[in-house]
Length: 321
Image 1 (cartoon, rainbow, N blue to C red):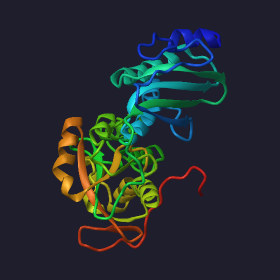
Image 2 (cartoon, rainbow, N blue to C red; image 1 turned 90 degrees about the vertical axis):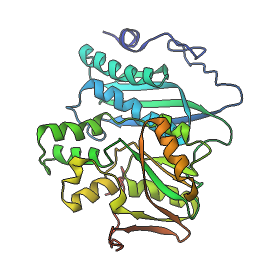
Image 3 (cartoon, helix red, strand yellow; image 1 turned 180 degrees about the vertical axis):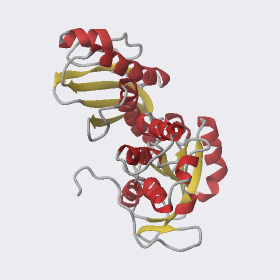
Image 4 (spheres, rainbow, N blue to C red; image 1 turned 120 degrees about the vertical axis):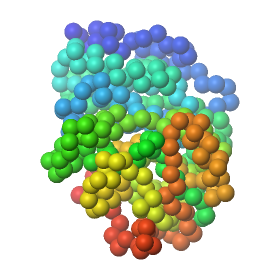
């Protein structure tokens, strides 16, 4: 099967909203008049972002999910996406699974594939997403203010950090029973982008970011852009039952520096608690208040006894040792 045959068979579908989709040198998009365009790209590289053992359906899902998570953090409505795919050889069964997972999530969020590229090479997927947001309504990283409450989204009855726990199992550092492992592996390989929550937080959240590189590392981006500090109540950070049974040091490493959560970390005025909870209920997702924004620069971590942690974990950095 040649390059254009595989594009036609696995990735070409009629577009509904775009003016022009796959098959030309460019796609043509028509955003709603008066709206601003939100654009983001994320790349997934085998061995860096995913393991060779991941099912292609889950890889297709995750490749789009991590990009939709960026739109969610901006409060943008998804419109369209492109896919650049490099793979060492054509495997039709693998391609069918990848497309299945990709389009299942795309259909759920009403976003359409409008173009991209394919080539031979090490396995790599790069997606660019396009969304739209009303002027002045985008959620940004630079709006946090002293006194704001700090919130994080999470599955109902669950928490953050499960993806990192799954990685530790794959690394051979942790052993889990089969059903527990599948639960945390699901979090690692099939994150759920919080698009509906991002839309519901427009006009309510003062800042937002999606959790891709760990809670502490990603919060630092918000603090730097907003010119403020924060205190995280570490024992208020939500965790799943599986992670709650792990040793305290591992639990904190997973929740504070784990990465791959793809939940929303956001701030809102302290008096807006009822509105935040209503927005989360409308979006069908749980949220927990885990701290406060402070005027003093820097990040502080405090446990349930009121004692501050001496060492701060680091977020993930592709080029840091």
